[in-house]
Structures are given as C-alpha cells and as structure tokens.
Length: 201
Image 1 (cartoon, one colour):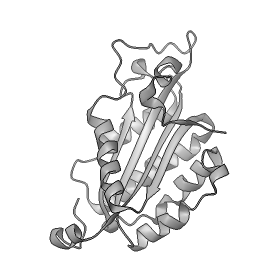
Image 2 (spheres, rainbow, N blue to C red; image 1 turned 180 degrees about the vertical axis):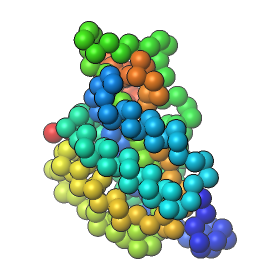
Image 3 (cartoon, one colour; image 1 turned 135 degrees about the vertical axis):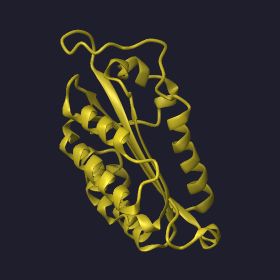
Image 4 (cartoon, rainbow, N blue to C red; image 1 turned 45 degrees about the horizontal axis):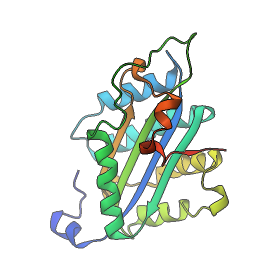
C-alpha cells in the first residue's frame, strides 16, 4: 500500500529492510498455527494502514505467547538501499516459489512420528530515516553474541509496535505450511535452502 508521501517522492527515497522469520514446533490442534492461519487468510489484500497495524499486532502477540516453541529463526535489518530492495524481493519470492513444498504430506498424528515445524515470515520495506526506520535501527542494535538468542527475537517482536505503516512502503507476511499435514520435518529443515534459519539458544 502506498504511503502518504506519494509515488514520485517515494521513488526518490532510499529504503531499509526489517525481516523476521520464526521456525517453531507445530503442535497439531495447537493455538499458534490455527491463529496465524486464520489471521493470514482473513487479512484483506488491500488493507488500510490501520488494518495492517492491527494484523501485525495480532500475529506478533500470538508469536510472543508461543515463544517457548521457537527452535530456529532469522532476522535482518539493513539500511543499504540496494541490499534492502534486493533482500525484500527475496523474502517476497519465498511466498511465491513454494519454498516449503514437499512431494507428499508429512503427516499430523500428534502421537506418532517426529516433531513437525512451521515457519512464519514478516518483511518490511521501510522509508529510510523515517521515524519508524530510526526506531527499528535502534531496536536492532544487537551485540553479535546475542544475535541468535530467543531473548533477542522476543525483544525485536516486542518492539515492532514502533512501526508506523505510513513509513512502510511494502510489507509481506506468510505461513508455511498452510495445512498441518504438510508440516516441515527435521529432514526438511536440514536442506540447504533452510540454512539461513539459525538454531536459537
């Protein structure tokens, strides 16, 4: 959705990117997958700024409640315009290139078989040096030893209320899998295409 700045002015401005992906245990019949699936499928394609804010407040709240289920994750913040645009396109591509596709269901019997996983991804292309961008930059000033800690993901998710969607040029959010029976397995996550998901401590 276009911001209030207008298309031509936006094209002259540089961008930053904030992206967060969580990989969590998928509990058959559990709250997290059900809530995220409902939120994504009911969110209007042409949402207003207020609807976007309410959507992300809801899904972030669900993620924070489920933080003990987090196993892996990835987050990025870059204020380099070229990288921000390219990385954002890659995150969008993850929604349309079937990154989580597998040839057959993995099964969803809660009493048999191995643990299944879901991923939830959010990415935001921010107008650089806007108040939201500056707030996100401070939020993401994380010491290197703490980059892949659950507490860091909790901090970033908790702080994302600083986003003003008038300063967000574009955003994307998606859930894998859509259906519980297609949950990701440990074997799936061991594939090179999921190397970017870091084990969390």
